Amino acid sequence: MNVHEYQAKEILARFGVKVPRGKIAENVDQVREAATEIGAPVMVKAQVHAGGRGKGGGIKFCKTIDEAVEQGERILGMTLVTPQTGPHGKVVRKVYVTEALDIAHEYYLSVLIDRARARMTVMASAEGGVEIEKVAAETPEKILRQDVNPAVGYLPFVGRKIGFGLGFSAAQVKAFTKMLGAMIRCFDECDASLVEINPLVTTPDGELYALDAKLNFDDNALFRHRDIAELRDLHEEDPLEVEASRYDLNYIKLDGTVGCMVNGAGLAMATMDIIDLAGARPANFLDVGGAANKESVTNAFRILLSDHDVRAVLVNIFGGIVRCDRVADGIIAAAREVKIEVPLVVRLQGTNAVQARKMLADSGLEVLVAEGLDEAAKKVVAAIEGGAA
Image (cartoon, rainbow, N blue to C red; front, side, top):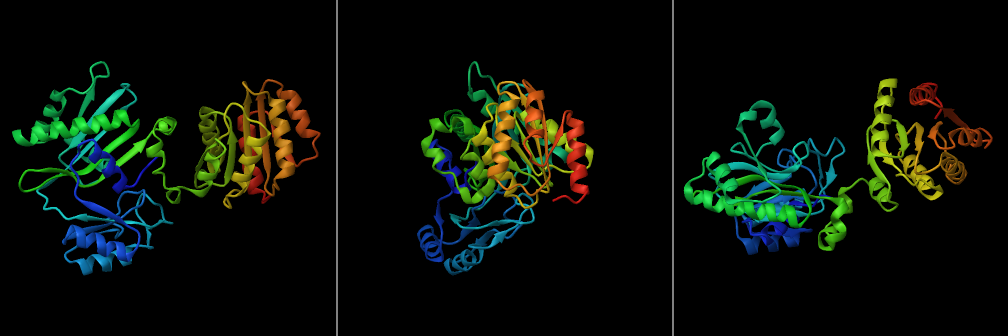
């Protein structure tokens, strides 16, 4: 789960990270109130779950309160398009009014999990304020990395090593070591998957501030953090993904034309790959889980068919925990309940697969049955190319 910048800063501030003063605003009157309380100059920042907001015109420096109100009125309600939003952009419903700081230098700092090494890792760079992917691609030597040993946790030497590596003074290294410790506590205690400050800035008097922040949280741990779960902004998520989450379905919208219904993340990835190799593109990732039943299959069909880009559906289920005949029964019941107006290809393998395929053949439904994954992919692509829709 992601949160907005202002929410990330509020959480980090609770752990002791220094952030600029700021207030959230949802209308022009609140923008004026916030700018007056903070005092000009201020920054007016669009709050959407995407980077590159400044390049899209969503972050503005305002010298006066009237200018802040003018920019707030312009930004609120706009459709902000950035490299991370895609061409459709995102509607700005809130702006964050913050004090404008004098900046001496910008840095990058994050805490995340290095899955290859199975431990927490700190990444830092003196090249802050830009996408870390660009730094990694063009000047990887400018990125500092330091593991945090899970057996002993964060030790001050980690902060000192990175701080001096970034070129901080001795006094700044002391403050940086404390800030990094606060970030790691936040990461650990909040079950985060990413704590990122970009940019981390120094002011002319040597102070360190988190000028922008991003926090991602492990969805599977949110039951332990009701306060964080309440920060979820459904406006920032795809409506179909939100709907799928209500039924414990793992759904991610993609840009293709083949709707995929699969059980198991690994099989879902393989299914998407084979569709691509066959000449089409998957329209989604949808994992119904290991206990697919009539209800989950019906809801999955309804969500898949709500996507107007879907021109055919491929169901690829391996009957291990769940028997194939039960899945076939669910597909038949769901197909009668949900109007399917696009070609449907079903591939069932595993326990009672032969029986399941016979059930589908005898159901009277217009279903294309396949035994192999390659055969299923070719059938769904042929159905699209044949104009059946």
